[in-house]
Length: 296
Image (cartoon, rainbow, N blue to C red):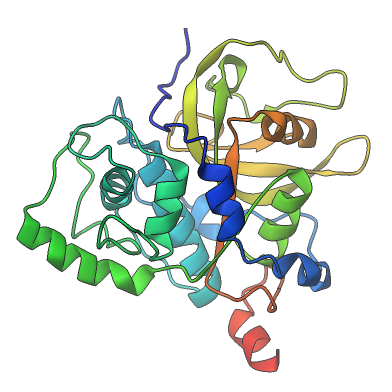
C-alpha cells in the first residue's frame, strides 16, 4: 500500500490543447540568456515557509496546494516577499471552474491554470487569496456567496500574468532556471509515493521500478535544480509536494530520466508560472528581478 494519498487530480483529455493554446511561447527564445548556478532550492522551500503542507490529509486538494505554492514561489522570486496563500481557495475555485464544485472530489489542472491566471470562464475567481482569508482546515467547506465576492476581490492581487505549457524535461529545466516554478499533474507511481526517500530515479536503464502500479493522479511542484547530475550531465530537479513526510520536509529530487518518463505518459500535463514576461529571463537563484526588468 502507498504511504500517501493521491487521486485528487482529475484528468481532462482537453487539458493539453488548452495549455498549448494559452501558452506564451516566446520564453523559449530567451531562456538561454539566464545563466544559473550549480544548485537552486528557493529559501521559502528550504525554510518551509509555504502554508503548512501537512494538512492535506485525506482530502483531494493537491491542485490547491500545487497552485497556491506555485504562486507563493513566483511572488517570492519577483518581490522577495513571503506570502502565505490559500490552497483551499485555489482548490475550490478550480473545482467550480471545471464543474466539480460542492464536494471533495478533486479538480483538473487546466481549470487550476485558468483560475491562477485570471482567465476562468465559469467563475469570477482569479488568482489566490491569502490563507488568513480562507483557511485550509483539513475538511471541505465553502464560503457563502457574499464571502466569495470578497475573497475574489482579494485574490486578484495575486493573479499570475504569464504561463506556458511545459512539455518535457528540457522545458522544466529552462523554465525553472529562467522564470519560475512549474505546476505538474501526473500519474503518481507507487515507488514515488514512499517516505524517507530523498532522490527518486536514476540513470537510463536503472530507472526506476517503472511498473504499472499507481496510487492515483497527483498535482505537485517543480521548484529548482540540484547539484546532482546524471551520466549525461543533466540536472536532477527539486520537487515540492503536499506530503510533509515525503522526501525531506516534502521536497525530493527527481532524476532526469524519471521526469522524461512522466512526460511520455499521456496523463501528464504541466505549466510554468511567472510574474515576468518571457523576454526577461534572470537566474531564479539570484533575486535581481527588478534590476533585470529595468535594464531589459
